[in-house]
Image (tube, rainbow, N blue to C red):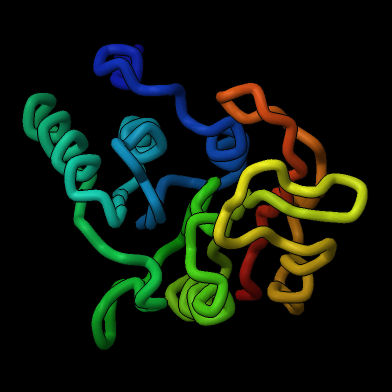
Length: 192
């Protein structure tokens, strides 16, 4: 039985969509975009995924790095990276079997989102998966939070044309602070 590291260190549980995705995705090289203090990375690492966890916030990465060191974890690498650069690595950087981007895109400069998604495509191995959960703002459900970026209806399926959509919905959900928001949730598989 694995120890619940998230509880041990006072972190929120892994995102429910990450937990669901792990029911069909075998452990592989994984990128956790906008990892914050590592709630998803720690969950994935305990399941045997090799995780590169990136976030723009140095103190969040320091927190995750301390947990990695205290627990002697060797399959999670934490690094400070500004996703706004639209580059998930340098040159012929690593490719991943799974890229997770949950509640991260809405904090990105809107001018960079298309390039970031294009880089996610490029960095995904054939047959690999991308998971995106992002706030939306629609006529029926205007976003009550002033995020820099929100998705439009149908925007993600368009960006992933040619990929197999394993899951896609645009449902209203509740954020941890109680706000009701519409979210686009997509798990897509790149053609082999």
